[in-house]
Length: 507
Ligand code: GLC
Image (cartoon, rainbow, N blue to C red; front, side):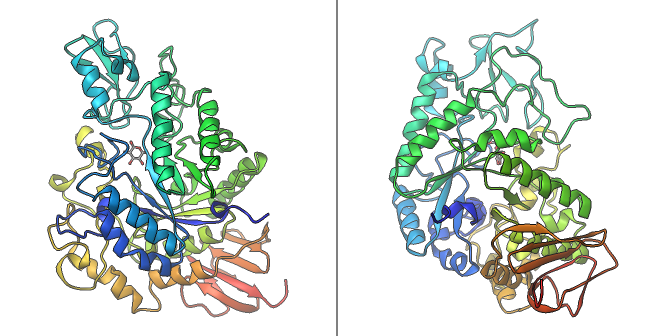
């Protein structure tokens, strides 16, 4: 049996607002993406994942959905969506879309009904609860700062929002909610999508007892909500979703954004009859450190292997700092990011690549007054937020806004952004874009095996290809053979911060 398409795919995340603008309003859109499909095909990815493009007031830039079965006029129309899917399929690119089931926008008709009349049946779709001791029902906190409860002054009850107050959480114990989302999935499956990325997939059901959260001590970056979410009811739900998608022809795929630290806990969501994939965020938090990275790789492979699931690898997404910056920025950070690219594209499983990662873009440090992320706004600036990794893509070396838009981009692009553009990098064989292009065309496959190597290095084999990463050792000798691709020009050894794929003469 040929393996499913998603089991060794490279999926390219398109942050729709920032990819390509076709109509000059400064915000990327679906026709813009359609006009750049040729670029993606030539880059060599297998699929695209589109962040939310549904009607939305934009309180969390689309992750606050007001209508699950339409396209926001800002991004185009349903016809544009169909045309995009049609073109993508013709080019051999699969299309994965974001589904946001944990919460709606406060502008969704259901929530408006729920607020306007406490006896309206739609009220039961949300988590309205009475307060306690003159305050909110419990001490749960929002990921965007402050209490996770907002007072509905009219009724005196509180409603739950694990993110912004404009993102009220749905009550997944409500069967109408469950039924409606099956219709949402069908709506898009009928339109030909190849899969869904499920937003905060571990959080849909909440602990009904509203017990205070017990978080690990010391806390991890995503310790929030550990005991309030990750409820057993999710597994039967995802089994139903899986059966629903499996009834469609083709191989429709789910990838869950399961924000749990422990890979064994994540693995429970990708047992054979549940989701096919779950993001593995571990590499996002590892330092540029050979031991830490090796532990992550081994833990992931062991946890996923135990349930027969495919591992996934992520170096960047629209919620985190760009990898070149995270590794220290400038020359050194960029070198490390290039070496990491060869590492993550050589690992067995599915790789998720965030737009602009292939250009080696760095995080942009915006002045506070231009920041838009609710995370920045709601924490009073304590957390800088995610705008810096969402700057629009530079397509051309020169020209207005480097080919992204003919209007004013929704976030400003740095003056020298043209040097990083697709055009500039396509003309430079030593660019990060060219590195990604050649690596994507030559990704190794087959069994994975660690090879012995000095401390500070990572060396493994996939069939007849050896991937060598010199993280921070003085030098790493390359085996004799053909260098298939290297993160910088190499002779017979890799210096610290460089990586290469080699087909050795003898193994
Ligand atoms: C996910 C998204 C993030 C969004 C949040 C709330 O983590 O990736 O961008 O803010 O969910 O929907």
